[in-house]
Length: 211
Ligand code: DC
Image (cartoon, rainbow, N blue to C red; front, side):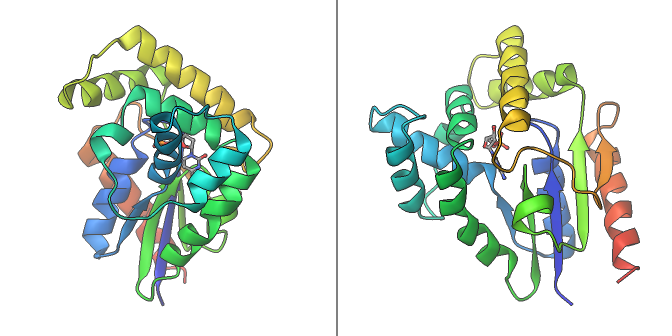
């Protein structure tokens, strides 16, 4: 039976790293669904349009190709903030829904990470993990990541961004960030990458043995 692993959680909670590690472990394809929202936002930024322009945002989401993602541009703070704004537009979410479901329906299974994978995109996923960490820990990780990419590591500004994004992603009416009722919570605040991976693996294995 194909296995779908859904990871959801707030910005910089560690879900992306866990998703990549789980995908490599099980030999499954991985989709970081945040990239779809980021690419939609970047298309608007590059065209000089506002991220809350609904008509343009929906057109940008519909025009996305899953390939050719320039991660260096997609992972900036500016793109992350704009992504959180476009992601609140129901038409944008609808435009990206089928792409995500098609990815999840691959014959061997898949790993997807985002905000609404366990609740909206793949409600039937075998394993659902809701990854959290304190805002301060997440800001510290994001600062390190941005510094590693050659960007500035303004910790206070990053923490502010993270709190703003948490509020917007959790407070929006359309598919807000929410743990599915059958998701297992994994708090990575005090875990390093290896310990978090082992904990995630245990959650998936426990689910697998039940199906
Ligand atoms: O995970 P990320 O930081 O790359 O996500 C960028 C933004 O995209 C995030 O603030 C909210 C939005 N997003 C979403 O609404 N639903 C998803 N499944 C993934 C991301």
